[in-house]
Image 1 (cartoon, rainbow, N blue to C red):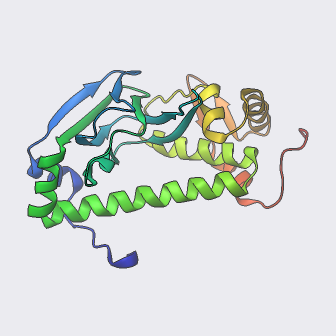
Image 2 (image 1 turned 180 degrees about the vertical axis):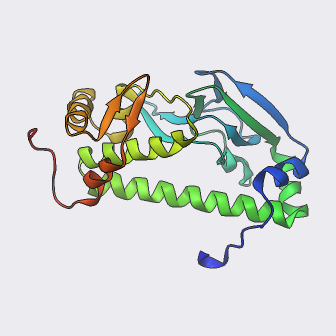
Length: 222
């Protein structure tokens, strides 16, 4: 375990139940959980579902920053002093169940329950690592490889069988390319047997070969 972070042996579900002081809410697909510009007054924990985090620039340019799955905290920037306004918007990509603590209650929990605090730190550190990997991926890798990695991450999110449908427009925003390029690569991956479609998109483990090999891969179809 890296950098001295000690994870509790108590299950996250037990810790959350023991923590108390929060509320659990259900969000329908497309419903906003918090909005950019709102006061940062609460921390959220995704118990079930998938959440899209996006931001809008002053000029009106939109960007998808992350897709968060069950077991992840969000909205934790409100713990800063003084608490900032929200710098992004969170929207349920599918039906979600999310626990919510107001800022003051959450800070008390961190102070009073070391096991809960250790679990929170461990999960926030893991999420920070994912953000760093995403940044490196965006800077160093081709759009084809970035799309392949994103699809593999979404497939990992979908390991419990939830039907996750992300439009090609959203994929393009997250990859940092155009929808036509995403469509091109999706057709290529399908032709090569890396993905398939039934009732939902199915990502096969063989797609990892795109992520793991070196060199540019944005040429023509074989």
